[in-house]
Image (cartoon, rainbow, N blue to C red; front, side):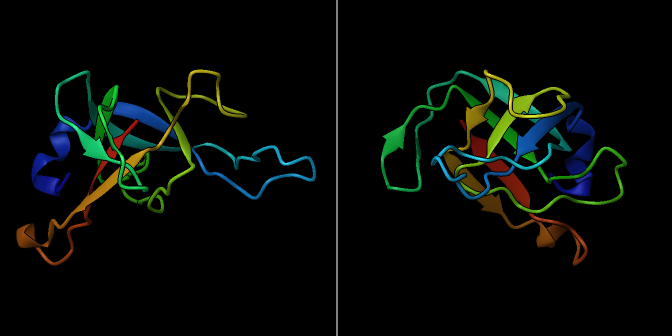
Length: 122
């Protein structure tokens, strides 16, 4: 969300970055990163995944990837990353979801320093 709507991001989101597979082919994830978000569970809007397949996300998250300190930003997520609502440490929790949809909304209309907004579907 742009700084104009930043007040809406009151929930902490944990993101684990997908790394390269280990020697056995299992996914390896990086240390958790945290950012503020707002979310919607359910709904009837359909989205398209990275392969062009339409799906109904169980949850949509809105974020500008602002860190806990509310001064710096984390890098944009990619397909294959996992995330969960809340603060978690260590490896991805069992209920962490794969990011299936990433939409980037330009927020520069609110000022040249505005970061883009991200809509993430799982």
